[in-house]
Amino acid sequence: MSRLREALGNLPDSVFVDVLEREDAYLFVVDVAGVTADDVDVRVDGRTLVVDAHRQKSVPTGFTYRTEERPLFLDLELPLPPDATDDGSSASVDRGVLEVRLPKRGETAHRVPVEG
Image 1 (cartoon, rainbow, N blue to C red):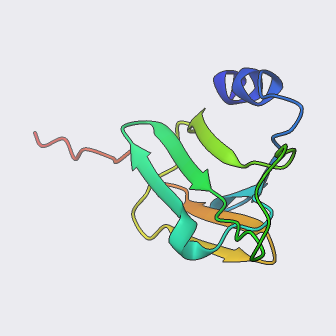
Image 2 (cartoon, rainbow, N blue to C red):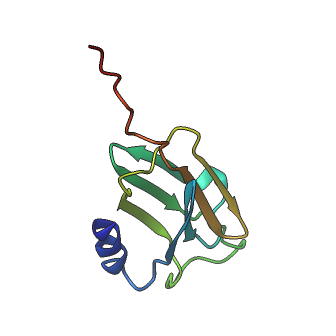
């Protein structure tokens, strides 16, 4: 998981990602304030978790932006732990928090019967 740890350490200060682990899954928690499910794209591309998010903001009638201090354009690529799989994965956005759940692969070693 050192590649993942390195990637998390290299994120800009404005991007917050937590990675949680339990026996059967990983949970990536990403702050995406103001983003809805329609504004975010989550995919597994090879051994990488890719998150693209763009917050849509409305401007009140009669106003225009003079400065915009809170844009959100998030293009995040995180290497996956070796035992993570996208089979049975899920994602949800609630109150500005994106949660991506990736199951762990089952046992990969299989005993090979030897005849003789």
